[in-house]
Image 1 (cartoon, rainbow, N blue to C red):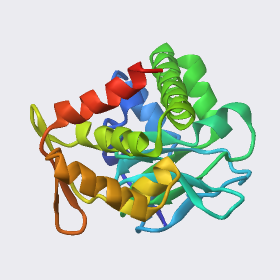
Image 2: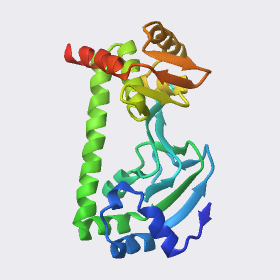
Image 3: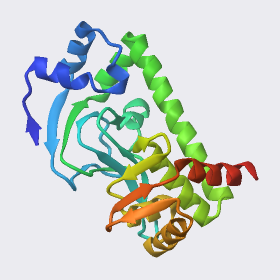
Image 4: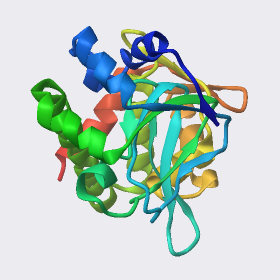
Amino acid sequence: MLINLSIERAISMLTIINEFKRLSAENLRIVAEACQWYRYEEGNDIVRYHDSTQSVFFITQGEIRIKYHALSGNEVILCDLPAGEMFGELSAIDGRARSATAVTKSAVLLASMPATSFQNLLYKHPQVAEAMLKHLAGQVRRLTERVYEYSSLTLNNRIHAELLRLAENHMISPNEAFISPVIRSDIANLVSTTRESVSREFSHLVELKIIECQGRHDVHVLDVAKLAKMVSEVRGSF
C-alpha cells in the first residue's frame, strides 16, 4: 500500500540503510525526494521472478525473503534480508527481468526508487557507488560460498553451516546463541533437503550437546565454537 511520509520522516527512516549511512543530510534529502513509500503485511510478494519492473527497494522496517521455485516446484530460499538492506538493484543496473521473488516475512516499510534515479545516485555520489560495489562483492562471496557447499559438503555438513550462520547473527554470549524462530522447513529449503532430514540432524546435535531445542521453533546453541570447528574442519578437508 502506497503511503505518504513527510520528507523529514523519510530522511530519518533512510538513515538505517547501510549504503546511505555516510551520506550528508543534504544528499539524504535528495535520496528521500526520489523515493515512494509502501507498507506491506506479512506474506505479500513485492516483486516476482521474471517481472519486468526495475525499481530498487530499501527495507526500513521488517524483513524480506528472497526466493524462487525450481522446475520441480520446490521452493529455494536464497536469503533473508532485515531492515537496513536493499533488493532489486540488479534489475535497476542491467535492465533485465527480476532474478528472484521477494516476499515479506513480516510487516514491512519499504522505500522504492526508480532505476533511473538509482543510476543517477551512483554516478553522482562516489560514496554510494563504493558502498554498492562492496554490497555486490558481498553477494558474490556469499553465492560462491553456497556453490562450494553444495558441491563439496555432505547434507549434514550443509545443515551445520546454515545453523552456524544463524547462530553468528544471534549471539547471546561469546560462545552461545539463541535463535528464534528456527523453521526447519526453511533450513531444508536453504540447503536443498527435507524437513525430516533437518530434524534428524538437530537430534544428533542435541546428543552431542551442541544445541538444545526449546519448544518447536527455538534453538539454544550451547557451543558455537564447537559447531564452527565442525564446519571449518570439513571445509578444510577439501
